[in-house]
Image 1: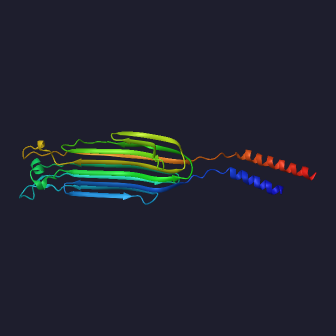
Image 2 (image 1 turned 30 degrees about the vertical axis):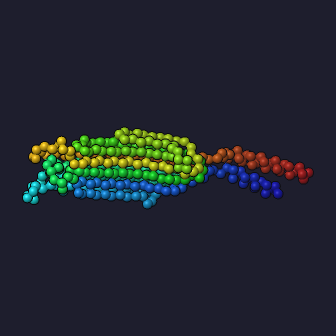
Image 3 (image 1 turned 135 degrees about the vertical axis):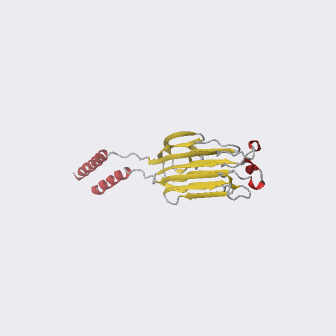
Length: 289
């Protein structure tokens, strides 16, 4: 009887000393890279998305307008047409208790070098000199944790690396954003967004069991339409190669850690077991006497 009691007591101490076993389960995810480009009548696009826990990909798109030819002369070019280019990349990984990733998006384009009359003189050539390029790299993961956990989120985002100034109805846009929030309560835990800036970030704390959304992305785009009337010059005037180039990027690590329940130190637990066992043995001897 005494032996059974001691074994039960030891088992109780072992059970009490077990650590918490935090589990992160991905409910829904999307990790993508996309690139598209168009110039005049030419266009191109490419994309890719994650199918495994580790995702490494890079996609590009390029478009170039066919140069205009002087009427009646197949060998004489009036100039080279618009062009556009986009590129997006990403390396990301989902671990047992972590999400990490880095990515970038870059877009550039130019009106090309064509004469003003060709750009505006005929209805069928109104699209000459137009361009557009878009690129994006994104991570969006909805996950569930079965108990409270400590988290640490760190990394950086940057956007707005403008490399050239366009002309006419042209422009560029780039943005990078990171978000972490409780999806059940629709509350924000951490959020940052930049347009023409770069910023490091780090946030930590404790979150309860439930569903959480983590997303981060980089997006870049440029565009240029045909030229407004006030830019028209003599028929011999040529438009220089004006355009835009911009980019954005991100890098982030989200790590979760179990919040362990208090565990008795090995020596303390052993002494407690032996002490309790000694009391039981002493009481048993007294009954026998």
